[in-house]
Length: 369
Image (cartoon, rainbow, N blue to C red):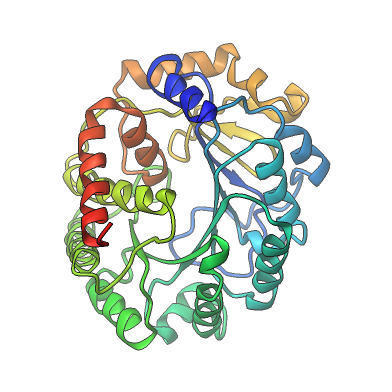
């Protein structure tokens, strides 16, 4: 309760400490997806990853309001010390949940990870989001990994057995330039043939990527994303699917995602300000080499490198560069379609709270609670 009070004060009054962060723990990946923005050809792509000792030091410096960390890559399960990293976030930063994005291609590694988590008795929730963006053959071709689709579905089914242990699996479908024409079919295939019950949808974004999206393709992505998110929401309301389940955090994620879908559909083709962005105040991105940015979109607004601040995040977060960036974001009413920042935008802006509470209430009624 004391932590929730501090988080509330920070979210609505102070706006100083991070509530959620994205941490790229590695750029290593065995896939080469068409829509990935990581430059694997860069000579520095795989150098200077933060060590486990550096991450141990870092995780003690976030302040008292960190609710969640999104761990990503590259492929995070290529780090042999991934469980130790996650454990540090729970023990040192006192997060409530860790969200891990993965292509799901290493079921044996992932099973060992969740078995360690189960044995640790850590109080907290792990959400593992597995990416599927096409039917089996096309999915493997897009990601350039033979047999990846089957391994990902093996991972999903295995993780479904751990839901009572606060480990929640999810399938994320990114609507892109190469799958928009079949996005709804892919969803139905995963639901009916593979019994997937928890989905999220992502729209390929234009900001922060190398090449702009052709206007006609962008409109097609928008239409496919709109149809997909509508179907996801309808199926959850009719209880054909469950969404995230098992805790208040899970229900909050479902309600938050529903609002993200609505806002993104409103702004995807016509970008405009909706509410103040929390980046550089309550949300930020840490890259594998220790570089810190307000988000994944403002790639010209590097806030600093953690090595220059002795791995003290709040020292970097309190710097003049971060303050200037925060002011820039507010003064320019900066806006985009980056879902991670938008999600924190929703839970830290009072204007969205009624809709968020309404979504939570509808879920409770639907679940008979």
